Structures are given as structure tokens and as C-alpha cells.
Length: 297
Image 1 (cartoon, helix red, strand yellow):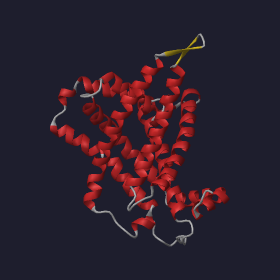
Image 2 (cartoon, helix red, strand yellow):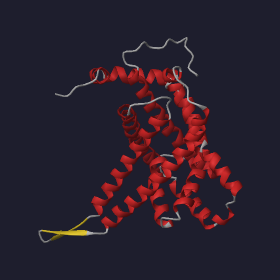
Image 3 (cartoon, helix red, strand yellow):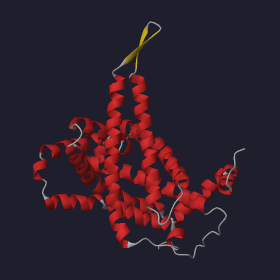
């Protein structure tokens, strides 16, 4: 017999009421405004972060294989615009000798900005945690760099696994006198690898960014919710930009920056919405805050 927690039983019994509760809390916490701030700083952070990752990993992985993997999975984050960023990364690698200690320190600083802002946004959503326990300043200062290091290691693993799956796609098997290519199987496995990696990254963010210890089950609920919503949104964005969008006519040379910022803001909104799901799930059965209570810690 499966034992269901009271919180899970409430959600299963009234999914619509829970969804409405999450949306009301997200609006009350000014989630879209917070997402705009996260997206802006993510735009400042993404290129320095990718440059640092590529410079470090190019010493142990073939450069073209690394850029190919990054390009494939950047499409998940910024649909339709990964080519421009990969082109800049390739150009930077061709002139890596210009990287001095000052430039390296500057890129390291800017690559951490998005994590700092995201931590502050999480503090608003998880106000019930922040009101009980605050994070030490030293931990907040070191956390982004530790997470960047973990992301770099994750990119290394994903690149190696993706290379193996691509090699699998070149093979075929002989079954009952027929030769069957494994290319389709390789493509499905690559997609599942990307989707599983997306859920893992989101879950890890929910576990380390909010103050206090968060159950991995609760973090996984938020990660799966945000990942599923982003998958739907990502395909809609790809269709929109390829068929209906006239953004290049309006913004001209600024098109890439505008589209990247727009994609990041939608992604940040879904990321914070997933956090709101976790927050409301934790608060099931607890007194709800009144409108007079402050939202900011």
C-alpha cells in the first residue's frame, strides 16, 4: 500500500486549487519583476560563464566536440540563438592568449552575478524560511563559485556521454536479416539526456539556493514542474520565432540580444514559478500570510 503524505493528498485531491494558490502567491511576490532582474543578470553572466567553462574544459576535451555539445544544449536555454553565442565562443578560443588575470577575474565576477540575484529572488519566495534562518554572508559569497565549479564538471560529464551517444548513432545492428540504424535511438537518448540534465540542474538550484535544508523530493517536484513547463514553452518559442516573429525587422542588429533576454526572462519566470510550487507545497496546512505582511526579507 502506497502511503501518501497530507500535502501530496491535498494536491492530488485539489490540483486546480493548488495551482491557483501558487499563481496567487507568485503574483503577490511580484514574480515577473523578480524574473526580469534574474534574466538581466543572467544575460550578463551567461557569456563569461561559458567562456570560463570552455577555456577550462578545452584542455581535456576536443574543442569542436565541446562546442557542439554546448551548442546543442544552449538551444534548450535560448532557442534559435545558440549559433551566435557559439560563434563568439569559437572566436574567443582562437584568441585565448588575450586572457590576462584582470580579464579572468572580471569574467569570474560577472559569471556569479546571476546566482547572487537568484538567491535574493528565492529569499522573497521562501520568505517563511528566511524569516526563521538567514544565510551567512561568507556562504552566500562562496556559493556561486562552488556552483559554477559543479556546473563545469557537469558539462564535462554530459559532453563525454553525448559523444558516446553520437558515436552510437553511427552504428547499426543486423536483426533477422535486416540492418537497422541506431541513429534514431541515439537521437532519443540525447534528448532524454538533455531533459534529465535540465531536471537535475533545476533540482540542484532549488536545493542550494533557498535558505535551510530542502528535501530533495520537494526540490524534484519543483524541478520537474519547471522543466515540463519550459519544454512546452521552448517548442512554442521555436515555432514562433521561425514562423510569425518580426523581431528582426523591429530591432535590427539588436535582435540577438533582445531574443536572448526574452528567452531568459521566460525561463527565469518558470524557474521562480517552480520555486513557488515548492514554497506553497511546504506551506500546505500552515497559516497563510496576510496582505499586510512584508514580502521582502
